[in-house]
Image (cartoon, rainbow, N blue to C red; front, top):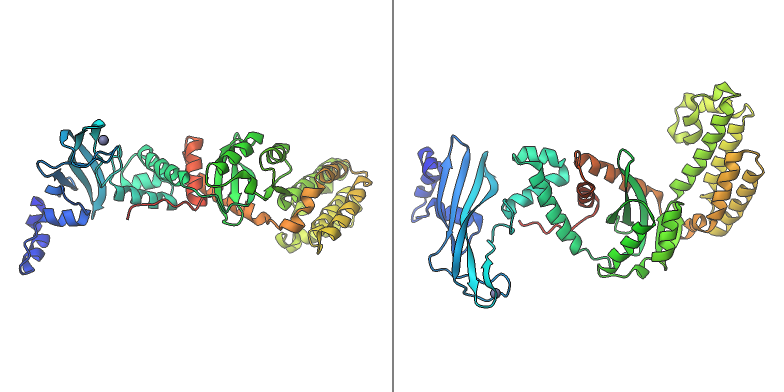
Length: 425
Ligand SMILES: [Zn+2]
């Protein structure tokens, strides 16, 4: 460490320690955790260029194990010079350099030996990659790349490696209850479907698209990860025909619960259709959409007062709104039986309402009655879906400029998958 010696701090401290005869190369060797036959041959610190270069080598005549058959003591065939970016040394970028050997194995022929400080093919040391992964869990990849002074495509390569390695090891043996939901990947054009373990509260699979085939892909994924699709007993989905058919075909043991959030959203949309049609004859309804869709807790006192006076005005919208409130109350019933009774009553009320959107939503709900009432047994909460969706939105922000669905999927797994990344420490 020629340049640093001029400053003298490191050298001076070592000299003060009686009996110590440790050279800076040995110090780096300890710090890097490098073992025989590898050793630190030299180091060069350039204060002006703000970089530290550490030269690593192996002992003359060293023999290495074959990476394929593990046969020991294979002689070196030839070497190639390689460089890896390592953790910064204070504010200075640090690089390791080494000639990496290819050995001759009597059984396998000429093989490239892996070095203990880096993955094959990576231009970063394992510790640098661990730092990069820690950063991208907490900040957008582009920001992490800027901070590390690397191009983000290089960081994405690291992200994909660790996410894919963790996914290959994912164990789904305990998976029994699953939420399935779609989310827009980019400006509503692409969709991904998330499969969420309700009990572990984590994303266990992400499929591209939102069709029936996404459930088939999920079933294959479960089969391939220490489980069996028949172990899935509960599924929470919206009333999309694609998911219903996908579950019926691929998750044959699962009982479907239709998500409360989606059920109420459908009814809310019907209320708004009634309002929009009525606005033509009752202009006071203009701009009141929000008042009929939100619960009291989410309205200001003024909004509540406005809706109160509109609700007394004998409007069709007021009737539809009362139906929405009544349906919401069904979820407060103490049992599936009571809820079933109220559900039937509600549907006949809606069907006789002479409000086309309410009649139509009642027909939809009746076709899905079992799955709606299944909530009273499964109690699968809608909050989880919203929570997961907000994680996906956060992932989208982290993957800003993610360019590909593959990048968005990787970050989603990273922030919502509770993966065991097995990062080197
Ligand atoms: Zn071999």
